Image 1 (cartoon, helix red, strand yellow):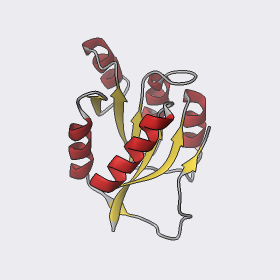
Image 2 (cartoon, rainbow, N blue to C red):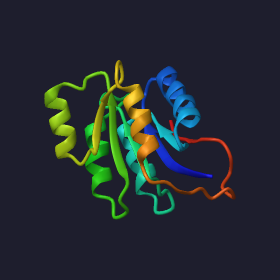
Image 3 (cartoon, rainbow, N blue to C red):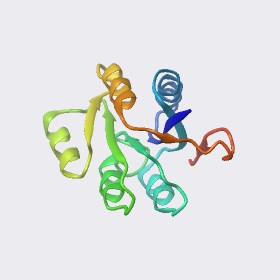
Length: 139
């Protein structure tokens, strides 16, 4: 089965777990890691063995900002899709996220269906089933 290897940067545990369940059930997504803050996310993404197809980032995090994650991720040698999912998807935030390399910006309160549709339309790669099961999380 082909799935998008996805990394989620979201500090709210209820939203994060709900997003994982929803995306893995309704889109060709396999969440391979999560982070609650900018620094953990950047550290994980900088590891050479941690390739993902899609990164979903919230703007306001436990520490740091999703903007810093976007900045770092857009500078990675390996290209992946960058998506912002935020309650603060104002025109200014949208513009700033796109300038920092985001492919799309979705509003948490009313764009979840659009995010699922976006994920379903992305090209997917075969998943390596030899990797350990479960979610590689960082706190």
